[in-house]
Amino acid sequence: MSGAASLMEVALFAVLALVAIVAALVVITHRHPVYSALCLVITMLSIAFLFLLLRSEFLWVMQITVYAGAVMVLFLFVIMLLDLRREERPWRFPENRLQVGVGTLLALALVAELIVMAVAVRLPGGAGGGISPEVVAAQGHTQLLGRLLYTEYVFPFEVTSVILLVAIVGAMVLAKKRVE
Amino acid sequence: MLGFLVLSLGKIVVVFGCLMLTVAYMTWVERKVISDFQVRLGPTRVGPFGLLQPIADGIKLFFKEDLIPSQVDRTIYLLAPALSLAPALIAFAVIPFGDTTTLFGLLPAPLGMHITDINVGVLYIFAISSLGVYGIVLAGWASNSKYALLGGLRASAQMISYELSMGLSIVGVVMMAGSLSLVDIVKAQGELGVWFIVPQALGFCIFFCCALAETNRAPFDLPEAETELVAGFHVEYSSMKFAMFFMAEYANMITAAALATTLFLGGWRGPVLPPVVWFLLKVFAVLYVFIWFRATLPRFRYDQLMAFGWKRLLPLALLNALVTAAVIVGVS
Figure 1 (cartoon, helix red, strand yellow):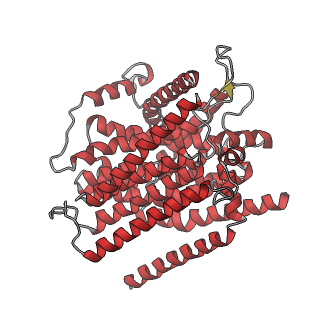
Figure 2: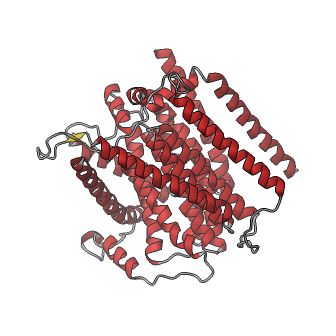
Figure 3: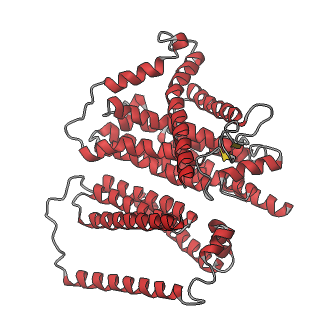
């Protein structure tokens, strides 16, 4: 039975990953901003369900609320600020050498990072920090994450909050200035 | 494995059937209650007490001509009603409507009376309902109509603003129960011996206001204000597509009432009567108040809506969370 269950998991992973990648490609190639934004929602949802496959319920719902929900704001930008018609120019490969170069470099860096992480987690006493699927199943994912955030990682957590607060205050200041 | 699948599917079919039936009959309840408030009779012609009215309405909507305006964005226009209805229905998956049952001894092991119990049930409902706004905004945009677009934009601003206060209003409940699972929250209210509406009265009021706003009900029905926007985001829709928006609104209302019942009114707990009956009684009591509000209050103006959400509800919700946290720390 566990064989069938893991086969199911692999199949689900394949489908979700495929949907995420295809939707992400449509985001950057589609000529209509509304469809691009809609495909971004699909990408975010697929990633959310990948978290669920990892038994990370909290990250699953947060991915939906924060990322899939936040694309709504993008929609509003599109509707209110952009011309709503489909772009006339046909799609072609970007000609700017610098753009292509930097993009490729960043993509390669990301792949390298993923490989390093995937190897490091498998090393004994590696990046997992003693947290195995069994530990997560025993203590509950949300509880474990909450405890870590408010003990070991409390400083980075608070710094992030302050940075976000600065962004909010900055947005308020800029918006007020324009009204006067 | 197979037994699990059959049981789960069975539960989904039963809950879905009951939910859709309640959605249909909520239209009858709403018309009857409103007419009572306005000293009228309401529907009386179709069946005894007009009880067959929802079925007649359903058949009528099904056979109506389906008009699609010529300048719409076809794909999104057709997708929007489904995007609106689907989140409203799947949010119901984590609501517990009873304790465990063996179906009068038919089952070998007791079966939990909820489709599923997940670790993060409350957050799941918020996540799913935050997706519900896409259907409304996309409908408003794809219809290529000024009324619909304005309705869609209003809906997005309103739902994003009130989602925040709604999330904060239940932090007190989550802290008192020590869990995000709805089954555990009902259990915690049983152990405490008192419904969470008593210690969390302010939280309940904030939650109720936000629930009205999130479901676009009066006095927060700006997205479909008849007097200014004709019907708002669904003005260009007809036949079953219109019916799907209608069903989504009622399904959202029922989910909100069920969530209020579970979080604040002790869920399915109650003496003498069976749990399911208690659950239904409480849900319908909350739904009655929803309709009562509609019959009583005039619609908010847009600036009042924003000021109420950001300057009143949000600080109050923060205060509620702060005081609850202080009391819990002080007691323990």
